[in-house]
Picture 1 (tube, one colour):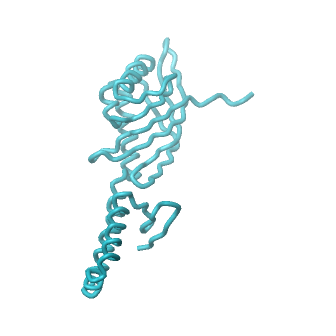
Picture 2 (picture 1 turned 90 degrees about the vertical axis):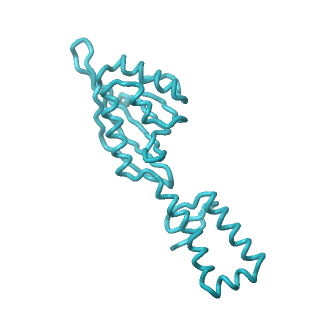
Picture 3 (picture 1 turned 180 degrees about the vertical axis):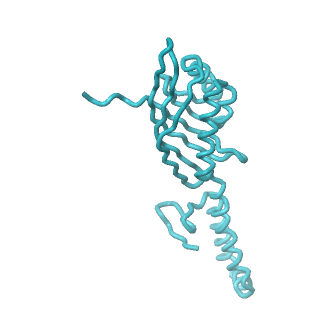
Length: 195
C-alpha cells in the first residue's frame, strides 16, 4: 500500500484517509512511542506490522462507502423517472434531509425539505408531466462524495405547442444507508449564445 502526504491529507493506496482513521493511527503510533516494551514485543511477534496495516486499511474500507459511478448513474435515472411522475413527495425523498437546491425555475436557493418540496410543487405546475432527457454526464467520485455534471432538457406542452428548456446541472451525491442521496443540486437554463 502506497502512503503519501498531500498538504494536510494522508493518501493511502490512492484514497484519502478520513479524520477518524488518522486520529486512530496517530494515537496508536504515539502509544507505541511511549511504551517501547509493547512496541518491541509486538514487532517480535509480527503483530505490530499487522496492527498498523489494519488501522491504516480502515481508511480504504471507509472510502468504499461512496456512491460508485454505476450507483450515481442509477440514481440519476431514478430522478428522471420520478420527475416525470410529478410527485413532489417522491422526488424530495431522493434528496438528503440537509440538501440544497438551486432549481432551474427558482430565483431562490432552497435549503430544507419543505422548501425543496415547495420548489417541485411549483415546477410540476409550470411543467406538468415534463420528461427530462440527459445529455453527456460527467460522473466523478471523490472520497465519500460523488458529483455528476452535465446538461439535460425538459420538454413540455403549452397551448398545444411542444417546448423545451435546455439546462445545465450539477448533482452532488453522498451515500446514506444503501441509497445515493442528492445533497446539492444546481440547475440553470443554458444561456443564449452571445450576439
